[in-house]
Length: 65
Ligand SMILES: [Zn+2]
Image (cartoon, protein in one colour):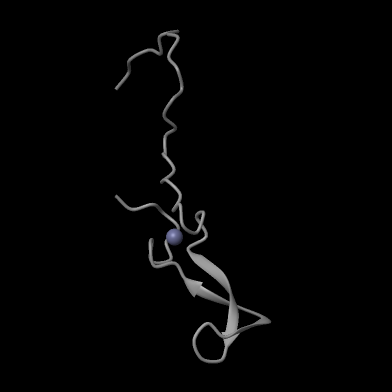
């Protein structure tokens, strides 16, 4: 496999390992942080936060097709 590298002017549009697109819902984190609410119906927002799995990408952080 010895083809000499030609000095071509190719645009580097594609890296060797293309990064998967980020999930738009969680911005690639794979999880959401939401305010913990207590009480019935809408409830009262507390100062606590809880991390929940992103249901769009199932925690992978990658956008799905
Ligand atoms: Zn996601």
